[in-house]
Image (cartoon, rainbow, N blue to C red; front, side, top):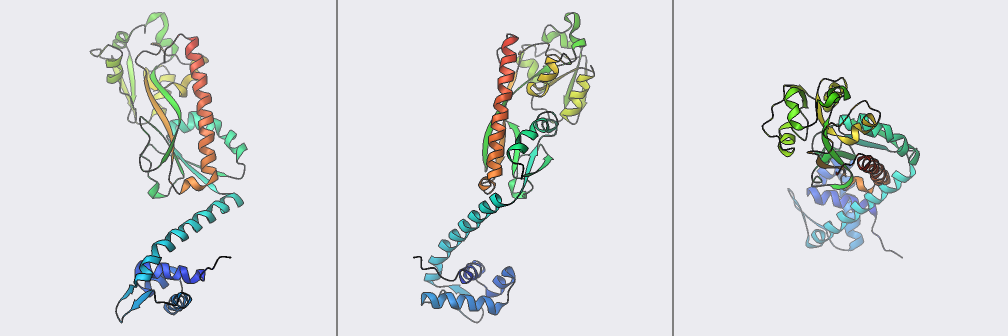
Length: 309
């Protein structure tokens, strides 16, 4: 049978020791100074030794109190984490997901019903961002980002590879107008402020570094650049997985095939504290499943075109 001290007294001691002040501990615990003092005295009585040295203007830990504090803090942290885990299982909880705007509109939303069937009790809150994940802000539980390496200072799982390449409306490629990268000199290229792959980089990789496009059209977001390409205004560099259905349907095309393709990964990142929530783990596992399915579709289609991705 466990011999445990009074837990309220342990909590009062831990906060008082953190500040070395009964007054500040009382403010944090929303009780009176006297209540904190009595709880600490109760704990000291239980131990049969003092945990604090009390002076008129200063409160300091004794050797016993100093050695007890880190163990108490660790135990209370574990208790809080275990309690949150049980609460997550017992009651609905919002799962806050941050993802890039175009990725959200053209890939994630179309698949969200699959996760909702897995976790009908979880309320999904979507927000869009391209900024580096910052879990200190406590704005979201999972951050989805495209990158060459996983973000540091947090947990991450890779769930999909993206292939970035030029696409355009089929009309622009009619009658062999876009057979080689040099043909871009007669066309408009579309770019956007958030693009991970610039046209100058693609032309260099494709073996045509000196080619200058006839015109350029610039947008702030990928979504608008992609829409402009759909309207036949020029060529744009975008991830293949975002436009594969449109290519298969004949609404868009990849005139140069896999020439100059750039590879990048998508990661689902989370803080160490969020990892304890089953919904976060299940959401990341679901992303890996959906991402693998998308990769299989791309590989099968690429093989049918004779591409080497």
